[in-house]
Image 1 (spheres, one colour):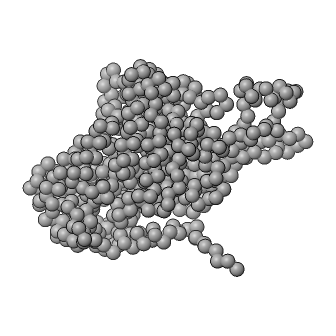
Image 2: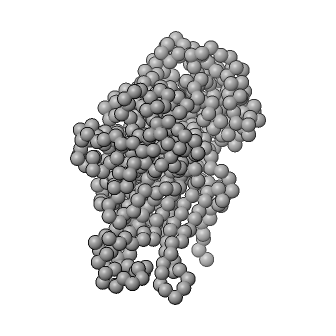
Image 3: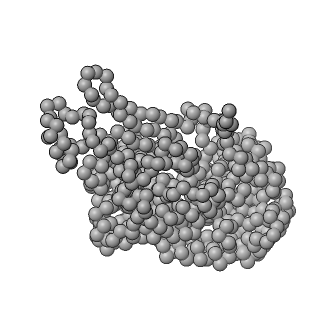
Length: 529
């Protein structure tokens, strides 16, 4: 009898993952959060670290040091974190708190960073501990901060000494266009090796996004169909019902929908959907294939941008039963702003696998519903045998299908829901009961919560642990950033040169009507989640 490999549904089922977790426990590590007084630290980083510590993933030698300019004692910093901690994690933080400290320092002041180094040497592991510097700072401080850390001797990698790793984690945005992204990469590479730089994109920490790899390359029934011969269209939607309230307008107005969401999160999801099979699950093997997809994105000419994209902003409307202001009426939005809050693009990937298959990308704020999903729409059978309208002759039915006056139902659509529900659904046709041969839609559904009976861990838990253990798979490489910006810059310049209008859509709706025109013929329309 042949041996059968089995993986318990309740565990990771991944020996390499288990090894990484053990490695994170074996090596003393120090996580230094620069900009620790900010919202990111209390809302995301410390709750994630608390959960990791409670799960035994960080080891006894692990410590956290918050760094900001404001003078504060260790106890005061712990109390600040404790007050903001979700109630269900308060007890776990109390157990973790003795390993959390604080150091006042200014990233622009070399002397205070030298004092920071002295403080780190007193923590478990001392100078031989691995160190991760998390830059929870404004983007314009990334380069100067690394320069100062380097001048203070804090990020130099001790060659040949495995425990003494030095890593820097930075948040998006990674530049605001291709030129600034190249300049930032050049500045970082002048001081750090690429393997020391962890560019974090929290979307890649979501369980359903990670599952794209497993779903594609573990299931033999899907991968043979994953190409232009069988896939008619791919649709990626990130819909939000929020606007730019709570003080976000100042940042958002300098970026807009394309820079804030499509250039990074959505193109990362696209690269996982469209990449070729990697030779292994090693970080570089996966990232090599992702960057090939991003480089193959067709860079449209200005006239193509006007034809294949829509940009818009929300007007007044009703969301969740409440009236909301227009974007231009939001606090912090400058008068006369031309920033888009909605973008829809019909993109193409010039590879052997995907040539001719449209990738429909859509993101908008103040839409009717919050959801993020990928839809893979498979082609219809070559001959339509079913569902001929009653009274229509076969020859007329054939002509109507051929000239597009009558569209076939797309029976097979694979939907990968990323948020708020983490699920996978496959539609297919079944015969409706009765004497007539009439096909009706049906669905196969998988829900992560129902199947595993546990909620998915927040993205920052996975990503922080990966940064600590040195797994760069879910972090962005320099060439990925530049390839993404090259495509985004083409859209932005096309809008400028082509005079693409900035249309409006009512808040609480599904965006501008012109976005539906990006679908051709019988291809369908935008998903509504």
